[in-house]
Image 1 (tube, rainbow, N blue to C red):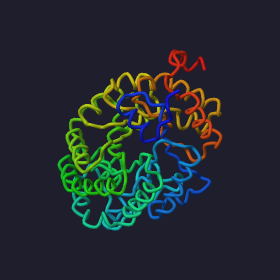
Image 2: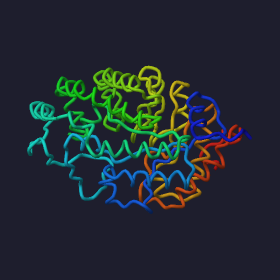
Image 3: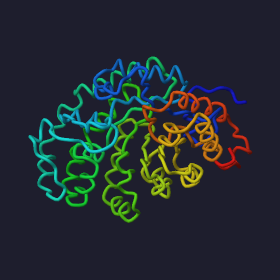
Length: 380
């Protein structure tokens, strides 16, 4: 057995494609014991609640990365947007409902470029960095870094495209990019200096890993021909964003392929080599052994049990089977961090979350047994 490493040593060895003492664990989790669904709507305004939530996850589960998460639309709100969510779901994925404080009741219609142009002209970045959701996040990072200096903290900054998609809705953003790309690019040009400054502030507060640019990797570009066309439009801007974020101090950058991950596995190595992304969180519908091979040593991947099928609807045994299989297929040689395939649904049974961490520490010790590498999911 290898000498026990600190979480920082474990994660950094993994990112060098070395085998640490065990597979690192990333657990993006809202513990409902200490946070209610209603709290999620205002989480970004309460740094003590963010710290308390991370304290719980770190102390209970012994994780190797802490995601300093508030909620999805933190940066949109910092631009003055007052969000109104659909009544049947929490603020996780989906479209944003109007009204807001600066578009004065107007709606964005992708078939009418002038509506997007009017919105972009009204956005004011000048006070964004002093907005409560931003200052709260920085405060929580500072406090947590002092408490846990050996645990990598992951902050988050929207790239310009993700930010705009949060302002207008993901589907409307995609249509606007196709119908009026120059307005979208003009927004990106204006936004990027402020976002880079926000990266710098988070790094100074104690962030080790930066989560960014998830909008590129969603189900909206699952079709290969659509994906390739959008990559031509979006790719240069996103490469520039990553470059400027690293110039601002980001040592490691993590992104996320949401939903239909299988449509982007063939690009994993390019994301690492050409986009300079260090970690890709590969979500549902992916075979992590295939993803590891497609990454080809150019990018570290993270993923694991299916969020809905396994965490929400499965049993503790289902969770352990999935963890064993994923570790056996993706962990050998380093370059892999175990996590849920996506976020853990709040309604997931507690015993399934406990089973995930227990199985990760039980089966994730290096070297990974050969018999575990040779199994398929049906053997477990």
